Amino acid sequence: MALVLHSGPGNKNAFKALIAAEYSGVKVELTKNFEMGVSNKTPEFLKMNPLGKVPVLETPDGAIFESNAIARYVARLKDDNPLFGSSRIEQAHVEQWMDFAATEVDSGVAWYLYPRLGYIPYAQTTEETAIASLKRALGSLNTHLASKTFLVGHSVTLADIVLTCNLYHGFARILTKSFTSEFPHVERYFWTMVNQPNFKKVMGDVKQAESVPSVQKKAAAQPKAKDVKKEAPKEAPKPKVEAPAEEEAPKPKPKNPLDLLPPSKMILDDWKRLYSNTKTNFREVAIKGFWDMYDPEGYSLWFCDYKYNDENTVSFVTMNKVGGFLQRMDLCRKYAFGKMLVVGSEPPFKLKGLWLFRGQEVPKFVMDEVYDMELYEWTKVDISDEAQRERVSAMIEDQEPFEGEALLDAKCFK
Ligand SMILES: N[C@@H](CCC(=O)N[C@@H](CS)C(=O)NCC(=O)O)C(=O)O
Image (tube, rainbow, N blue to C red; front, top):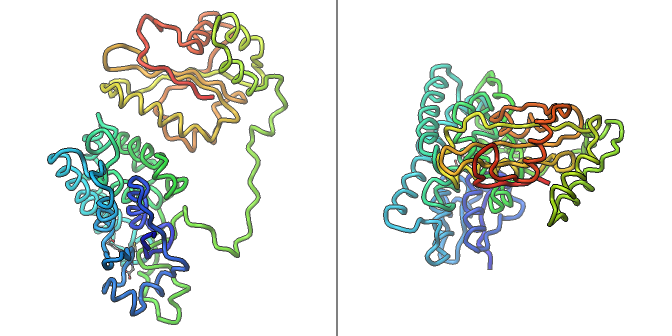
C-alpha cells in the first residue's frame, strides 16, 4: 500500500520524498484534492503536524513532518540504500550536504524570494544580506563541484535530492541566468540532476526564472479564513511545474520559426538513418552520402569549442558534461544532428563538436533554452574551404587520432 504524502503538487519540499521514493522503489502518493491553506489547517492535519505546514507523510506507524526527515524515512524503507552513501564518511558527508542545503541554500533563497513575493516585508538591506550569503554558499558549492558530478561519491544520494530541490526553488523562481552564471559548476550540476529520469518524473521540465520578481508594495497580510482559498499559499508559490488550473483555456502552441523556412531538399531523418545504418566503409558510404545530401541553403554546419577546457580534469565528469548537454539538446532533435568529441588521452580534455542545424543560424530557441550553448565558442563552417570540409568529415567519422590526439569519447546526437 502506498504511503500518503500531504502536500499540493509542485511543492519542492514534497519533491524530496517523491524523488527518494523513485530511487528506492517505495510507493508514495500525494493526497488527493489538497488545498493549501485549507487542508493543512484542519484538526486532523494539525494532529499530524501542529505547525500546519506541509509536507507530512502518513505512515502505518504515525505521521512525520519536516521534509528531510520524510525523505530519510522513505529511503530507509530500502535496505542498504545507496542514497545514504556507502561508507561512514560518505554517510556523514550526505548529512553534511543535507544540512548545508537547508541552512545555507534554502534560507538564502527564501530571504531573497519571499519579500519579493510579498510574504514578508521587503527591505533592501535584508535582500543584500540574503544575496551575499547565497552567493557565498553557491561559491563554495561551485568549488566542491568543479571536479564532481555528484555531491558525494559516484551516484545520486539523498544529499543531491535535497540540495537539488532547494536549488530548484531558487532557479525556477528568482535565480536568473545572470545570477547563476557566476557558478558554472553549480549550473551544470543542477541541470544534470533535474534531467535524471527519477527527478524528471517528479519535477517535470524545469525552466530557469527569466526575471527577478518585482518588489510587492506591501507584505501580504495574513489571509482571512473566508478568503483563504483565493489567496496564494504563504510559503508555497505556485511553481511552473504545477498543472494549469482547469478553467485555463489551452494556449495554441506557437510554430517553431524553423518550420516556416522554405522546404529543404535535405531530409534530416534520411541522413540520420544513413549514419546509423552504415557499419562498414563509413567514409565511402556515410560521409559521401552526407555531402551528397547536404543542402547549404536549408542547413548550416557549426564547429563548437568548449571555452573552459581547463576545467575538464576528470574524465568521467567531462563525459557526463557532454551527456547532459546532449540530453538538453533534445528540444531540437527535429532540427539538428551533432557530434561531440572528448579529445586527448590526458587531462585537461578538450571538448570539440560539430553541429548541423536547420537554417543559417544556431537556432535562437536553442541558444535561449540550453544553457550549455554559451559555454562553447560557435564558428560557422565555411564549406568552400577544403580543410574545414575535411574536419567536418573527420568529426562525423570519429576519426582517430583527431588533430593529432586520441579520442577519449565520441557522442552522437541524432
Ligand atoms: N522545514 C519544513 C518547511 C515546511 C514549510 O515551510 N512548508 C510550507 C510550504 S513549502 C508551508 O506549509 N507553509 C504553510 C504555512 O506556513 O502555514 C520542511 O522542510 O518540511
